[in-house]
Image (cartoon, rainbow, N blue to C red; front, side, top):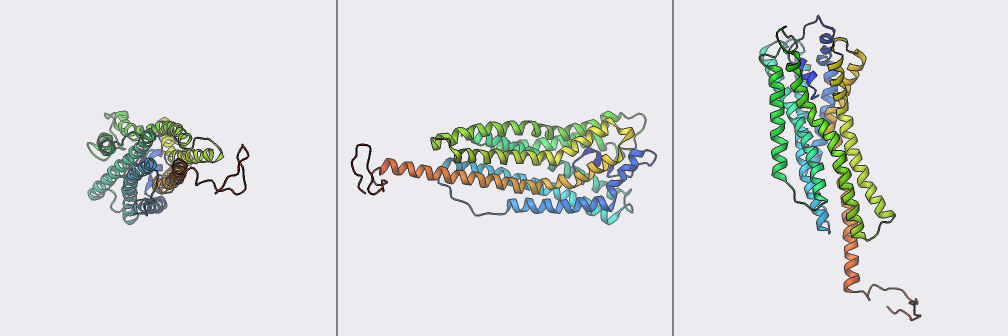
Amino acid sequence: MADPSIQTFCCRRALDYHPSYKLMNEFNTDRFNMVCLLSSIIGITGAAYQILPKVELKVPNRFYSNIMRRGKYIIMWLAIADICASLGILLRSCLKLMHHFQWYDGQPYTVSCIFLAVWIQYFYIVTWFWTLSYAVDMWRAYQDKHSCRKLYHMVAWSIPAIFTFIGLSTLYRPNANCHNLSLKENIVMKFLPNYFFTFLPVIVVMVVNPVLYSLSTGYIYHIITSYMAQYSTNERKMLDLFKQRFALINLAFYLCWAPNLINAVIVWTSWDNLPNGVMLTLWYLMAILNPMQAFFNSFLYNLLEHTEQICCKCFGAQSRVQEMVECRPLLIANVKGSSNSNGYEIIE
């Protein structure tokens, strides 16, 4: 739902002489907007659950306790941005369901629609930057480097504002009739900036995050082997948990935003002959999956947090055992009737 093609055609009625414009009317049907409404409600529910206060687990290992706090901080801001984006979709769907075409060409509707388009695009770009920030911070955290919270906030809130302003200002100026262009207007310069600034962050996250998570997994392997002084089945399972969680986070992001990228490619390459069935399928997938990002994030980041809690407990228990061995080495021998290598009996 943060797709430029949808924002291009949602705020004014398109002319009916072009088959592609007729197809765009699907965005204003009750069926399409009901799908958007339901998926946005699910997304808001998932993100709201993510930011609810939870019982803090006391972790004996200070290093992993710090990593968990850092992760929760970024996840909270990601959930807030997800709520705002899904709320924008919810309001836009309600507006269309209530008014249909009765108010469609009026100035108040156009202004409201453009405002919601800006709102949705801005907060979705914010979610993508927070998703990138989480991967960067985990990569730094497992190297025991400090968190850059101020930098994350500056990047995650200011750059999306710049991208949204440039993209949508070129799209909606001098008026909202961006799909009914005159012969003098440059179509490429009218549409391309918004596509570029919308999908650039998506592509960056799709490329960079898997690399950062892969590097983080390497550091986790080093940490596990250093703390445990071994790499047996338990340690291998622990590392596999991290790999699975990181892979699921990447997979969910690809699932939510791949339809938007495919849609953009088809729109730019086949505008005069859009495949109706394919396009409608992609648009409904976008209507379902884009707001569901908030729900997927709530589920998957909680799983990752659960994985880190398991590791914290294991590392904490291992540290306590090592401390007992160093402080009271004779008291941990609790074997009756056994003997050492020299044949002497061990007494409790």
